[in-house]
Length: 369
Image 1 (cartoon, rainbow, N blue to C red):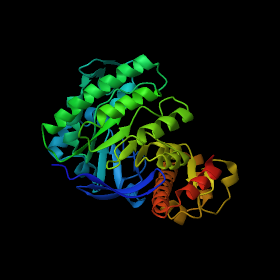
Image 2 (cartoon, one colour):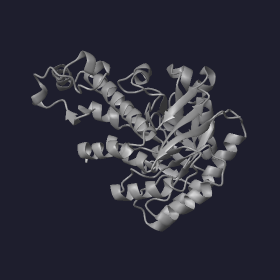
Image 3 (cartoon, rainbow, N blue to C red):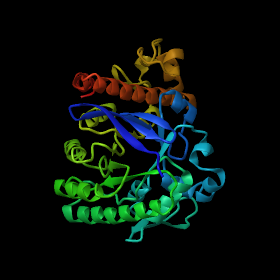
Image 4 (cartoon, one colour):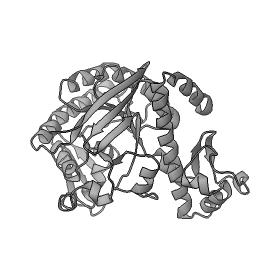
């Protein structure tokens, strides 16, 4: 029996402050989950992610299924011990990765057929095999396998993908219930940018005993007004007693505006990806450290930040590292950006608890809008 539950502590408009109560401890919400795709980050250790404030990480089922493989996690006791992480882990189902390989896969009712990019071996990712892999990983929260499609698709292709997502959600749930591992399972709302499809998806999935619900199929090509409208529409229909997770989003302003719409959980590669490109998120805005203006600057990336990069190094040093393509530069920027995101989530939580999220949101729009 799963120990997972969600406690709602305070609302401020549509925004919510709560707690994910898991078998590995409590996780305050709103929460941002750094993406450890291969049970690792490219330049940062899981300990450093934890020191930045992360309480829950995201692992990628598709990539971990291909390498090192299910049998490794079954033999070694799951993803937590494998990567030395004591906090929570959410694993995605692999649906987005299948969507990202349109030339190399075939989706049938049985599942997604594709070839491994490691050794060209034939693979099948089905609702059942995705759950089996996530159970081997031992994540605290699993996701159903869904059919991701271009959010801008016409209504009939979007309807077909949504209905298959529903059938796969039922199969994922049955597979999870067949073996009680104590893991939570979230359903994923699909439907593109079509309001009637989103309504139908919410109505179908909320009749099933999922522990939480994700809003999927956004940040995959649609314009921001469409994403905002669909986020608002779905969030307001989801059960108040279960967490709401907006998948694959986003920038600091994206997070604030989604929290305003009632979302609790987020993941995105942006903090570390932008770090690799030489960008730092700061309380003064986005800073491109490779610009020559920073060559002689002794001040930290962000004077308000307490990360190891800002405490120990000036902009000139990080500029030197990034201009010279030293791995340490990407490492320091990644640590900083992860810390910035965690501090932002904490600020939003405190603002909701104090009934003043609107003030913070207006400050963020003035900074990033």
